[in-house]
Image 1 (spheres, rainbow, N blue to C red):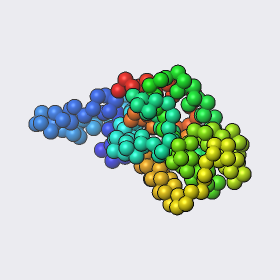
Image 2: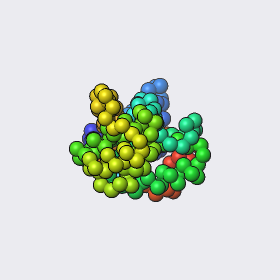
Image 3: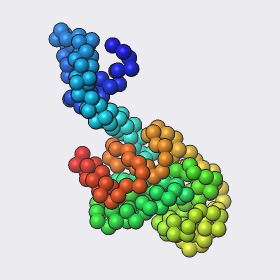
Image 4: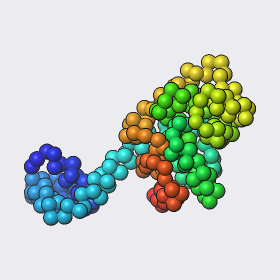
Length: 236
């Protein structure tokens, strides 16, 4: 059996209900692994349409394990960088960049989600990957979060247009935030570094990226997709 086929076989096994027959072989049932691989290989050739679903299910399974292993780093907000119900039964996490147009477009969707669902909590995590200004904005955002003024700064900066020193300063003034508290740069950079590390583990390659339950999603999602993801996490 070609080793390149093994991930696909694993994926098909996931769709077909797991590796029950392999477990049977381990217990002395007489079914050889090679036989199982041959059966699955033939099934894959006869039904190639199942491969995308199979691979997606395998990716979801693996990403779910990674989310579970890093859950505290994902769902625990920095200061006031959260919205919605502080004791919500489901937490939606957005990894965002202030220079990301899709993140900006997601802002009203998040507001609508919270307005329609009193049990959801949203956590915001800075992931400044697009520009040097993104990191400056992320530091200012974290300073606002530490001072309990994240939401005011977040909304003001997004409303101010493209990120620059001027728009960051204007948003800080509007929100009443000191964006340069003594010694805070080190704290902010540590938080950003942690977010970067976690995002890499989760396989995130852009913003916005989302975590809800054990699922990782990407892109500017419509309200309906966010609601479905929250409902699925709630259902377990």
